[in-house]
Length: 382
Image (cartoon, rainbow, N blue to C red; front, side, top):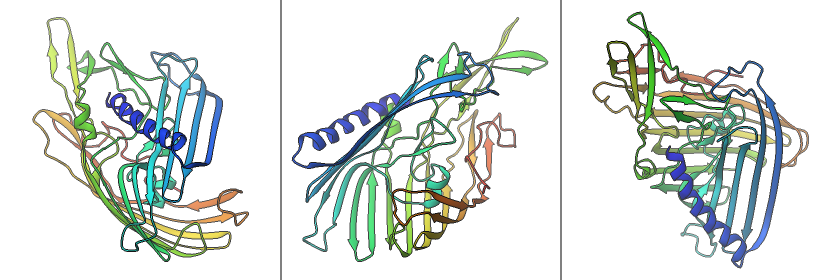
């Protein structure tokens, strides 16, 4: 769908960063290449059109950085492929950016970053992999991988404090499991993809469902503005108190999927033609984190508030509707060693959702909010 065109845009961005890192005058500071093979078997997996319950997977990830006194470039790119499955492959780019730095003039920003970059917007969103602030790569729903926002970052840094302004006119949705639309049926080899039903009983007669995905113009998907700001005091990876607060007005990371479903009646057959119209909708997100670290122990409280936009429902179209929600997550973390980048870590945290009801509007609305699946991976969890 739109992800193929978006990958082309990312490809050019990655190439530009690659050239800066390896052809420019900056010296390589850090780089690593990782390969992993895996075998997965799902005993409760229902048969699909692919007919597979076992998966042979190859993972590859590359991370590279290069920097000089005034410039830094970084790239983080990876891919997944199933060796025993057709069309079961994907790639992703969590980060790819160029950063310009200066410390000579205090009133000017110390950092200007262009590209895709991860920031610590919300501890809650990172820990639980919800993908509300930054998009995630959901090849495996139990191990979502955080990806950065794409645009321009302007950062001022002072003694123990920083302020970042973010702006963008390029939107890249989150990536989920790959799927295929063939002969009006949607299927996927991924055990994390819920395939929609292909038939129903209507007027006491079996009725076939045929799906059509109406591809939107790539420019209509990616040309979406985002503005935001992030303020921090202290450093959550160092000792002492720290806090982070921010606001974003942005597109929701997962696409909305409203559908139109007229019933085609014939003398000997009944068919429901379901046309799905992927679209981008906006929301407002506020974040606030506060915490304290002492030696190998730290505690924190993370709060996230989301206020979705719910545009009017088109005639004869069924779509989701979201209520505002507030998410709260307190947590405590223990490290075996004081080093921040290695060593065993134990973390205990709790997630609580207030609000966030999901409903539907349109001719096929059930009143139970169960047509489109769950809004979040977790709502109340420890």
